[in-house]
Each structure stands twice: as structure tokens, then as C-alpha cells.
Image (cartoon, rainbow, N blue to C red; front, top):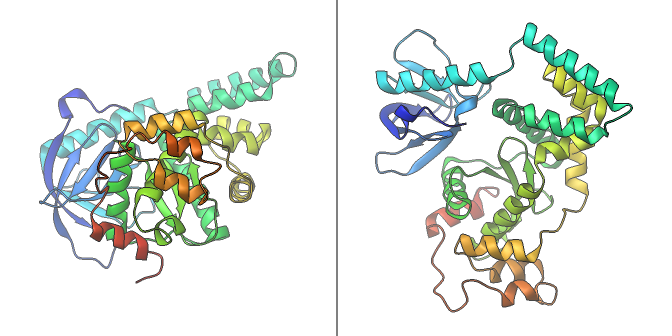
Length: 339
């Protein structure tokens, strides 16, 4: 989604709190292309809110009160009329782009029904799945990603959280993956190194931070996961597992069965991750100005199976600049242990 041109890079002051028991603090609110960024006056990012998911909690009243989603604890209070007008304009644009109940839903349902009928003769099931993925608005992807994250939390442990670690992860992912960066979460239990979920989420094993001396390994795994999800949309992977009936239900009602989410979470946690071609990895590491060496040896301490990555290191002979500060890195190493 692209913010209306006249509101690009708009900034205002606001009052933000992370949870119901936290004190409000003065922050700087910046409106970007796809996110609302909340920062300290010293320009330290505190959190990123996805614009399609933002909810206004007191319509018509001032100052305006916002949350990053229906069930979120964070709150943001804004009394700047220009910023309020910008957020409302973006929300209105999002609502216009969303499917509306009634005639549009009936037309989509009828079209999907005809497509299924034709599919018995002409289509492969994958065609309907791909079409459904293309039609999903970003807000629905985020909603599905959050529901899938809950299933993974029940199976493998809840994501570790903390304001300092959240900021550190945002800085690391932005440094490596650019803007807008996926939202990264660390999980303490034994899970595959990284997983991509619909809606711009990457779940990573906390061991990638706890077991290594520098953030280069975690950064490398995040970059590799980003390459992997570029090759195959996480939403397409989910619907391929869910099957034709669940895909048709999502297309016509906007809902996925809970069983489909559960089964896909089990599959993500248990099956091997598809490999990423070395050439694509080296290209992305070079674009991020990141050495491949730490990531390669984390995959294979002997270096034998990752020799191509080691020899093609785009930063060979160049000084290794710190990706994040030592304080940020320490907060990531201890976020799941409470140390």
C-alpha cells in the first residue's frame, strides 16, 4: 500500500504506552509508506505499526486514540489535526480497497463457485489457490499471520518479548532487510532456525542469538529467510497445505478453519526448510553489505558443505562494521532467559 502523496513523511508528537500498566511517554510519530513509526525524541525507534492494521478506538473524539490491532495492548494518543487527518485518509483508502459484504461478496462467491465448477474440467487446484492469494488484502494477511503465530506459540512456546529487544530486532531487520522490514520474533523452544508467516512476520529461534558471539549469524539467517519467502509467498504455502475446501472458504467468507492453521503450524515446525540457492544468497548478502562467513560456519562448522558461501564472501578483506550496538545485541541474547 502507498500512502497518499501529500502525507509522505509526515511527523507529529504523541503519547505512547506499551501496555496497560505502563506510563505514557512523549514520542515522535512518523507516517511512512506502509508503517507508522513510533520513536523517542532522540530518534530511537520504539515500534512499527502496520498501517492496514491500525484501529481508532474513539472515532470522532479528540485527542485521537489508536492501537496497532484489535487485541493489541499498545496505545497511541495524537492531537495533531494534520496527523489525524492523514491516518484517517489512509484508513479510508484501505476500507475502499477491502472487499465489502453484500453485492461484492455475492459476486466474489458466485465467481468463485463458477471457477470451481470450471476447475473440475480445466483448472488445477493450484490456480484457485494462487488467485486467492492475489486477492487477499494486507490486513487479512496480517490477521492470518497473527493467528498462525498463536498456533506456533501453543506448540513451541510463546515468543519472547521486551521493549528493548523489540527495538533491537527492528533495528537489525531494518539494517539487513531494508524498509519496510518484516517483524521478527524470537521463540525459545527448539524450532527450525527461521520461519516466514503471512503478513510480514519472521519467527526465529532464540538460539541464533544466545549461542553466537555476534549478531552476524542471526542477521544471515534472517536474510536467507527473506530470500526464501521471496521465492514462495508464505500465504501460498499455507493455502497449499490447507487444501481446496479451506481455500474456497477463505475466498468466499474471509475465514480459515482453525484446523487448517493448526495443521500448517505443525508442518512448519516439523518439515525441513527448502534450501536457498547459494548464488541468490551471495547476491543478497552483498546488497546488505554483510559477510557470508559467520552465517556459513553457523550452518556447518567444518565449512565443507558451505565452501561456496565462504569463498564468495562479498565482504572479504573489508572491515566488519557492527550491525547493531553492543547494548542492543545483549538485549537480544537475554530476552528469552531474562538475564
